[in-house]
Image: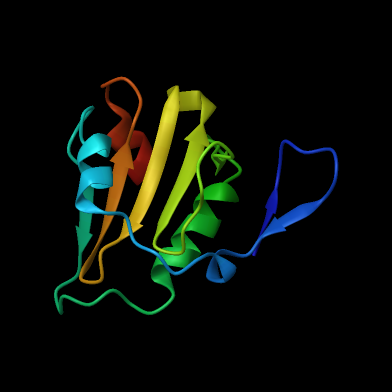
Length: 118
């Protein structure tokens, strides 16, 4: 659970309550127009349970830059969460692909992967 900023009232984001849908291959191909995704793969080829949703909440709760918040212009899905990032002039899309996590950046190309990894 993460508080949603940029609102006058207090709202909370509960990612496990989102519709349990995945992005289609067509939707993913639109995300790769800027750059290929950063892929997080684990040795045993399994994502630890709860990591995807915990990562989304942690990125929204970061105190230091880049500051991320929910992108209200797109429908949020349980397995694809769109986060706006003013500091990077773009959006970050987290995708749970069962065997790995994908991190897409939809802004202008630059050295943003390093910022995301920090």
